[in-house]
Length: 66
Image (cartoon, rainbow, N blue to C red; front, side):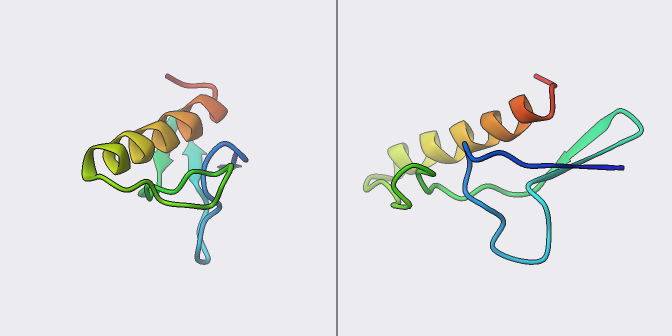
């Protein structure tokens, strides 16, 4: 089992990891719509959804998966 983390997504806010890889499967925690560079949440819901999905993509990329 390997912990996965990246600075390109918000840090885990609790006692868990951004993702875990186990037996070739990547388990990703839920992502919030916070920009990791600014620490701020965008305004409109569409931008929040885009940011949350971008954070999810960045965690998956950090795992070496796609």
